[in-house]
Image: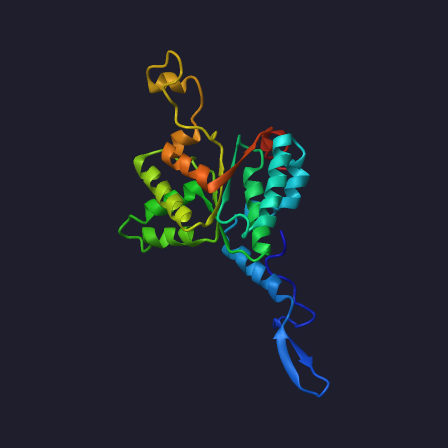
Length: 261
């Protein structure tokens, strides 16, 4: 990731303007080329990318994950094409990155966000669980924040990365909150990039031979994205996002185990 605070520009000495002198001696100011770097640095700070993921770019994804499996290579190529096509060709369409833990979904999503910011977009990163906790906390009468105050930046972000959707225990309130967020962004044609550890499948159905109860059905397969956010919203994501399935080993187990070294 580039430095958040660019070094002092030798051309303008940090003023963001260059003074040009005409042949007749008149002097005038014009914006310095370093203004873009300063704008990008400010936008990155406002994007709320967690420190753990500040280093995540499309280039570093290629180094770490890109050729690990065909699906990761395909996802990386699709991500770069998405950035190049944004915003005219994407027209509000986002991405849904699915796959098991540790395959680089968050890394790729943040890499896309950073690349879009470099191209002039405004973006925002939110962890799904943290967002729901903030909304719940706003219901406390002693808290100054309101639900609308928390959700308004989520609704209005040009590009939103919503990380680990489905990670919170599904309840009617969770489903209603997710529906509110996704429907608002869908209606406004705003780009949403979503990661999830859950398979992009409908809720557990009754189509399993011999399964008569929900526990019987859960014994046959893991929870799906439909189970976690409801089939209506899973279906909505099919309209909002291109699905990229990412399969591979858990990088954190294979390489990045915690040590004191």
